[in-house]
Image (cartoon, rainbow, N blue to C red; front, side, top):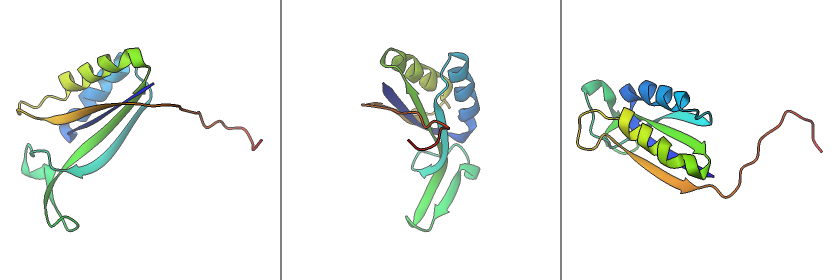
Length: 108
């Protein structure tokens, strides 16, 4: 199993998620994060008291999929996450050794 993690601009997340869902990817997580991507506009930037500098509000997207689907997930994120900047975000791929569902049953 693979984890594909991407840091993308907030304005691109809807298109990326729709493309992934249309391709059959269902195990998605989306988080608001702050990072150092180059902002597209002033609304994306905020001042971080913790870091003492301006940071960009961005999205961390995580997709979990079978090994043979990971390349397709990466392609879709890179295609639909484009902003026109030379670097509009980053995509990482990692191996997941094991995964377990959390079922609705009582304790064993």
